[in-house]
Image (tube, rainbow, N blue to C red; front, side, top):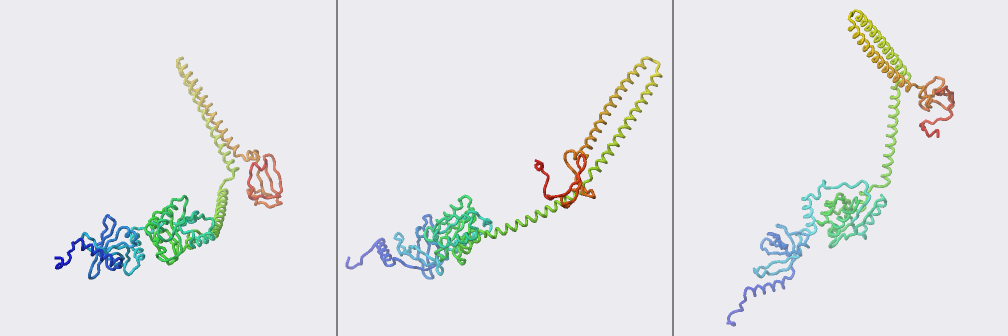
Length: 455
């Protein structure tokens, strides 16, 4: 039997032989094709089919390799992938275990950049309404960068030249390589929690897309967006564009430009302050002139106190005459009523009625006396009140308190301003008792009276 028939293999034996041959023959292969039927099960692995016009092959990317890929598999995406050919024994199907892939016709980094950019833009991370304003003159700056790079030296030189008083806090991080993005995001979060932090600046020198890739990571973009402190991105040269530039509140083309954007020149601020001070001084002079003119107009509207005193004297005389006329009229009326009452008493023949009338007359006389006494007291108080007001308004009373009135000679005009007379001029000073003729020997136009002048 063994000479006539070939060796018979079981399905498992044959599958193992094919698996061994394939894995030995195709240990590492590069394959190009179009992705279809992409699946992401709960295990975290990725399964899809890679096909071209004639054939297709099943592909699997394990979770550890998928996390390292910058490009995520998607349907209709044409790729180039690297992997190991193997056979899945339970189904007897051969498949490709991929550990790296990149888009066909475009670098993986460029494709990943566009993919993340479009996704974050759709979420609104680039919208202008989320941009925070940069303070006019920040007092404390936080710089996330490599302390050994040339970018930080250029930044500090420009900052020192423009405004050396600004406090700078440098947070050292790696700006490229594995783990750099996590360090940058952690630095942004730490500076955001730092007390009195005004602005956070991300900066590094120029380089290739791969060198700058730490600033294109999603973790950095979301850290910038979540920061409550304004963030300025100054990564690379003017031609370099990163995801951080789109999310940041302000993009600077270079680190030196970031220093110029974040603070203004100290000399420029001094000049602006001087201009504002001059404008304020001119405004104060104008307000002072307006107030002086208004005071002059109000003073011109005030009447002479002597004229007002004369008017009040005339009014007081009128009131006194009215009171006297009223008193005489009341007295005359009382006398008339008294005569009438006497006549009526004479007409009464009954003694009782005569007594009643006499009592009534006595009560009326008493009432009249009380009324007259009350009226007289009221008139006296009124006369005393007007006399007191006249005394307060009397210029002689003011002079008696130690004041004086100065008048120019020879016209006698009252002096209110030291500028009305010239040095060497004679003036007449009225005192409470008498007057003095004086000669002006010195002037103080701006000096005001103070009781301490006589101490």
